Length: 120
Image (cartoon, rainbow, N blue to C red; front, side, top):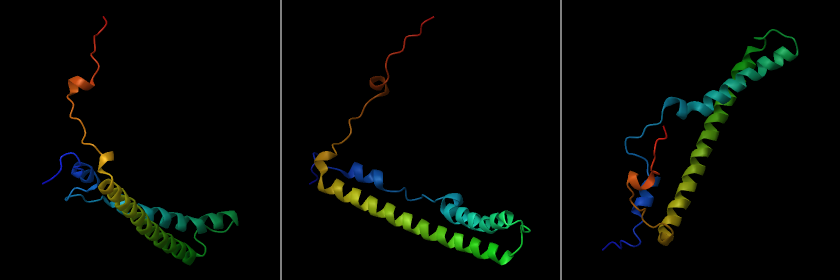
């Protein structure tokens, strides 16, 4: 029998993703694209400072771009781990302290909105 007083399933449901959720391409590859572009631009800036042709030492452009993309993928993986750990800690806290999560009161819009009287 489920105790209605300590039922926190509604709070745990908030932390779950929808089963058909799929992240868009920009959100998925933003870190890699951004840091890859920044890595590609570092040799361009270096060449501009030393008054060399922009494309001089093109192998550096490729290496720094690939390094930036790898760093972006690593940071994305690390961020996912941090967020997963935070969610696990939150889920554990909710399960151990159900008294802190009473079921929300259901309200109608009429109870939430302040009555509005137009002034003409």
